[in-house]
Image (cartoon, rainbow, N blue to C red; front, top):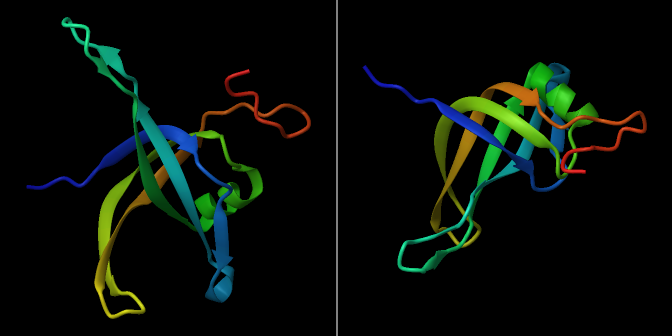
Length: 121
């Protein structure tokens, strides 16, 4: 038995990129930042914050929600699977891209009446 499951809670790093494919199927790409807070060791050594950037792909209804409501800075909960794709760049060099294929998304930022995020205010 094997499991490929990812759970992330983080902040959107830039406004989503949304495309509409055949039959008006939407696909959204977002970049999500997760940060592990820094700390101080017993000997006084400072360990800094560590931020990871995750490429997340959302399809269909989730992409429609992202297009309408999600903006840079919003906090999201994402569940999904890790996928790695291989491609050749313009120079013919083989490249790899690891992304999260989202199965579930929840918006954790609250929006004010004007549509502005109130997260962290």
